[in-house]
Every structure is written in structure tokens, then in C-alpha cells.
Length: 95
Image (cartoon, rainbow, N blue to C red):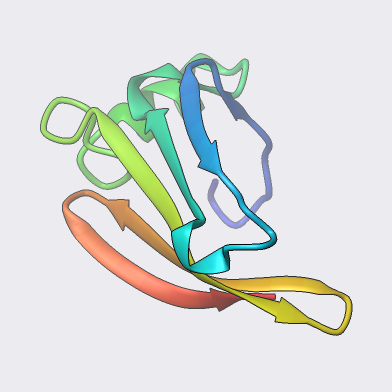
């Protein structure tokens, strides 16, 4: 905030995990976060996070992360992570 880092947490989220090492094509993780529960412990920050320039919780009360396309890697697994925030989805590789 104003160029300074701060920390917070979401008070409510859920995850549906289906991970099958022998059948990676069937594996998928769905995480849903209630953006209305963002909390930093500072009222000014918390109010800002709920506003339109951040999470816009009135219009977008949830954010999601979906992990798919799992593949075996030398040190574990990789996947594609698709995050949807404020109605916009972005996919990135997860190693």
C-alpha cells in the first residue's frame, strides 16, 4: 500500500482436490476464495481491498484458481494454473 508491502489472509476459501498420480489426465484442483473475507488487520487496507480498484467484492465476491494438465516432472509434478479474478482468467505454468 503506497509502495509498502503488507500481509493479509482470506478468512474463507475451499478446495476440491482430485489428484491421481497413476491417472494424471483425471487430476484437477479447484480453489474458491471468498474475496469479501480479505483481512490485513488494518481497517484502511481492508476497506481498500474490498473496493473497485482491488477485489471489487460487490461485483466479484469470489476468485478461483484451477490446476489442470498435470504432468510428471523430474522433481514432482507440473500443472497449468488458471486464476480468475474480477471475471478475467489468466493461465500460467505451475512448476
